[in-house]
Image 1 (cartoon, protein in one colour):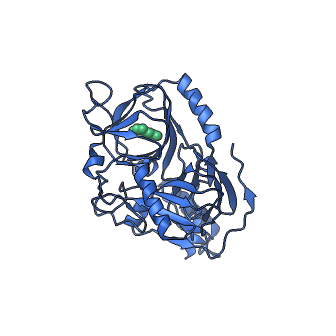
Image 2: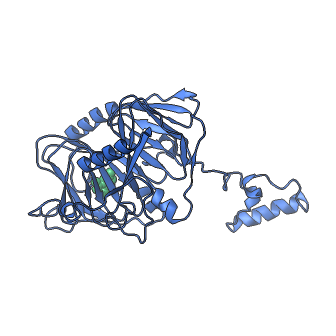
Length: 370
Ligand code: GTQ
Ligand code: FE2
């Protein structure tokens, strides 16, 4: 198709003066001839602006602690969040083109005020205790390894009831909602800056106790833009599911997808969450997928090769795999990697693709974390 060769026709009809006049007249009325566009539009495969990147816990945590000392959490700023800003995105504060990723922290007995917005969010807890996120009135307790959902337009606030610090990963579909010009935001009208604490916590969790909250194969198609009504997925359950898979297979990679217990679909219409367990001393096959992903290392150490570049990682590190980058993981000790991706959107639009590479990638360079 000539559109992706971005070559002007070898020969144009008419004389140069007429052509130049045509181009001037087109520009004057905001029309652009496709054959003069040099930027490649219809690329053979995705060319994300975001680059593979890693943010290390060793770098982020001391900075987060300084922020806890220096910056209060209050109305206006709303959240103490360090956004993963991909250096390929020209200063936009996004981890990859479609996903926001961040380290959020809460100091002793802090409360982040309630608000709601059209972008949906997922939280994966890294460290701390005594904190809950209230999601439309349901107080979801947060412990390390738990996944907590705050779906689109659900009121949410974060409350610390203890003297320690709390750290978690935030994933939001903000860049895609922004690309659709669909961002809306509201402050909680009160009374008070946060929702009243309900008499009982974890209502959704009790309601769906025993339901199917994980699958190891493909998740079901989203039937409508609904989200899981189960809001809190416990690490004890996630790890039990991984242990169950590990007992049944010898694969280097065991993958558990979090699903809506009512439909088997992804937890949010826009984002899918999973944990990938890489066995100690093993290497996974290299895979490319259309769509972006953010990985958060929960436990274990190892490395991933992303488009020929090696990224070494350990607990609390976060890295991104932009669309169609080849990725494979190797674990030194058994590793559990939390993954959030925009895959449900590509699937809903009928444009999801994946490819397993026949060979491991050659490593041509090693990433040095800042
Ligand atoms: O916790 O409500 O990382 O609204 C970015 C925006 C977290 C939150 C983020 C948010 C939140
Ligand atoms: Fe929020």
